[in-house]
Length: 487
Image (cartoon, rainbow, N blue to C red; front, top):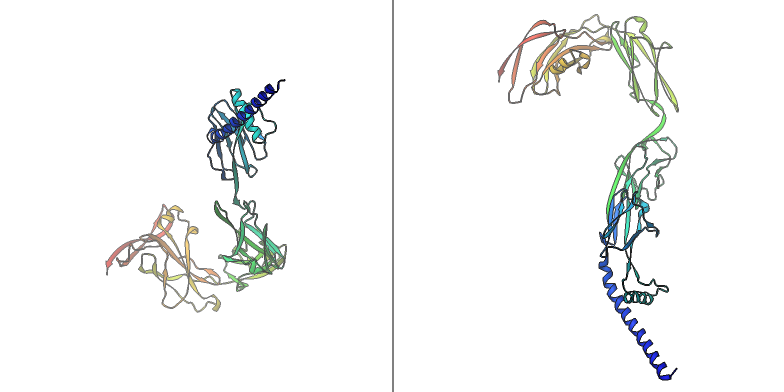
């Protein structure tokens, strides 16, 4: 080839390469400005925070309609499913990423990728050149991939999983109060015992574990309420939750109310309640026997509670007197107590029962009884029991006095007793009985008293009684005439 022609071709090739390089640089500059608007996310924040089980949707939008767009998860896998907990929804101009219920595994960088196709050779050449300049060793002619990413931050709300609200520990042993705290980020846990903060740092008795509170050499004083408090503070939020756990210390039964009299009295035809109370953990069982035999029959009723039992006896004859044994047991030990039921004298009834004064919330009552000389010294009256029901309650219970409330009074000189805690401007049916060690006397006749409307109206009430029989309710009471004098 002629040297001049070889030189001209070399110049032409050089100029062509310089032109392509210039065009490519301009294309990259323009495309860099074009990318920000051509592919967008909504919402557009670089990081988004949600809690587990929240729902969330984000849109990937493109200016060009017929563009290949796809979502990739934090592991780089393309999401193509149109249904499921995490799926995509495709419409013209955007591709939505839908989280129906966010999980901890969803955290990380999610990326929307779009492939831009050039429609002419110059653009294709420019794109290829741009890719070459950007360092792509094998550029795809006529295509350009654009990406937009966001970071999904997933937090788990504080919960206490399957933590039991009532727990037990053996006396004299090491134990752990379990508190299974869940949360992401994991919260800090602190403890309170009966409302007092527990210092677990450098403590020889307490240690804060990942699954609860360790307690060394548990004693009865360690029983009570333990508050497991979880708290966390992050740059984006702060929260706290707590749960209260009742800790019971397992131990063998021991008696409570040690002043309970071991000698009880009852009169033939009367009723007596014998109570047996003992603490234990687990709660103990209670068993009653009479003279070594199991208790059966309609004359007996046994009531149970977690830490006590009451034997109610309707004494029909003297064969029901004698020794009653209460047996208490749990897996750690047993107890026994014998109560001696002896024959007593029925107390005489009240000799006077009347209203001295009415208040807005109670009555001042005059109650008296006769002291007989032929009564054994330990069978004298030592007090009174007053039963009362509002007129509406009496009608609602069809005159059944077992639903009535009562108040016990100890005997004192003067014979005046205050029945308080009543409702204002309310009519009450009231009756009284005397008390001694063998039980209650017969009830007095039913009387009707009414509380006042207000303190300003002080009323002295005089009542004239006339006994009559009310057939509809089937009880005996008094018809009264009330005179009010304002003082």
